[in-house]
Amino acid sequence: MVRCWIFMLACLALSATGCGNSSGLYPVSGEVTLKGQPLASGTVVFEGSNGARGGATITNGKFSLPKAQGLEPGTYTVRLSAVEAPDASSPPGPPGPEVAALERTNRDLIPPEYGVKSTLTFEVGPNSSNKLEVAIP
Image 1: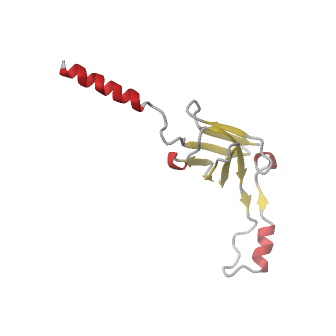
Image 2: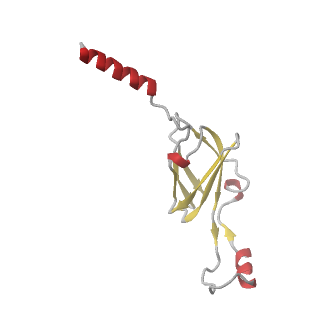
Image 3: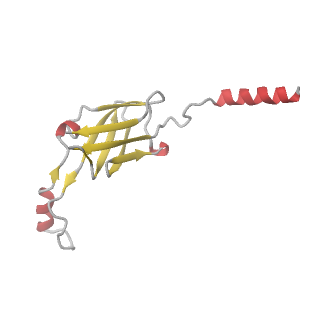
């Protein structure tokens, strides 16, 4: 009889806690390819219609936001960015006219429709895989 009560109390405790996400944040991960190859490095930013934001660094085509830095449930606009510097062998030292000229020649690798003018959206929540895969042609 005592075992029955213990079992019932354990079931009640489990049902009260549920299986939900108590912090309200969800981990998000994904992969980004550019012209069929993993994007070497870049960033991904998620902008929610409710003002929520999050982002991560892309390395070797992969990114991850752990639960602690995750996203609230909702729909997000996804913006990707990556630049290619023309020459990383500039001499060390304080920024001067040479460095400013090099920065002006950085080339954006991401087309505007995936970056500054992105219409790419992503749904985050309990009924989603929360995994984003983007293949940029």
